[in-house]
Image 1 (cartoon, rainbow, N blue to C red):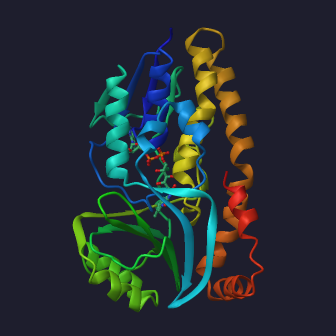
Image 2 (cartoon, rainbow, N blue to C red):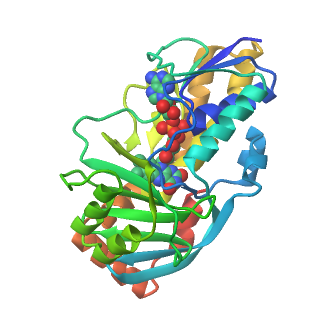
Length: 337
Ligand SMILES: Cc1cc2nc3c(=O)[nH]c(=O)nc-3n(C[C@H](O)[C@H](O)[C@H](O)COP(=O)(O)OP(=O)(O)OC[C@H]3O[C@@H](n4cnc5c(N)ncnc54)[C@H](O)[C@@H]3O)c2cc1C
């Protein structure tokens, strides 16, 4: 068996590592950070199928996770849409999920090096799952915090502000994850206060007050910038998976599912490589074609819709179609699976 090395211990890298170990393949995984850690993420998984989790051998992890069947959208204080999701969304914190996946990987015999930042290697047997590539000129800011005492949550909530949006999702231990994407500018404040200021500055004053009172956990606060959506550059000749390959805008809640699906797509070709039945070049090409085929429609749909959430005219249009019942919500949800 040929060895596989994975750079990046997020969802794509860890789930692939678990699946390869289950197939008896020796895997070494390098993760730049350490577990457990909070990550900027909406923490609801939209669109992932049971088959994918089962093919990766990680479905048991999700047997007791929280499921949300409904989503509610708000523009300012006004609810503009309520709908049932095609598949219930899974609510789970990244702190918990990444830690569990890392434990599972090691228990199956995988070798895990944490605190090990890799240089990108265009080398046989190396999978690049190190997340999105930073873009210094990016105009986006992502912020997240857990709150511990929010009583009136209505399923998955999505609130659209002047130049950003924020999602509320229930996760384990009665916590609610609050995560938003905003245009980058100075909002002032530190930790959760920065997020509340950000909501205020985007015209979401009452949400800001509601969350301020709801017991934020400052240790869960995380921020990220330099985000670039869509296909990531510089992947020629590299077997890149997850956000390292392409990043879908967060409003879809589909990025984590795509990370798992990418691992599933790569599994067969990597097993063939490890068994000596395929060359590395063939594997890279097969995986790339598989990912394009699998994700093309949803990436396109997200790219078209994202600007609607972020401009006054776009939100007015969205509000009009949702309130008049013309939003093709089922068709849109189906695109994400
Ligand atoms: C604001 C925001 C909200 C989001 N909300 C949601 C949501 O609600 N639902 C959803 O499904 N998705 C959401 N996403 C997207 C989701 O978080 C990602 O799509 C998902 O984490 C991708 O997984 P990944 O394994 O590809 O990358 P990551 O989870 O980013 O993992 C990459 C890993 O690689 C490590 N690493 C980086 N560089 C190196 C290196 N050089 N060497 C070794 N290791 C390295 C990192 O430390 C990290 O652990 C959101 C994203 C943002 C920004």
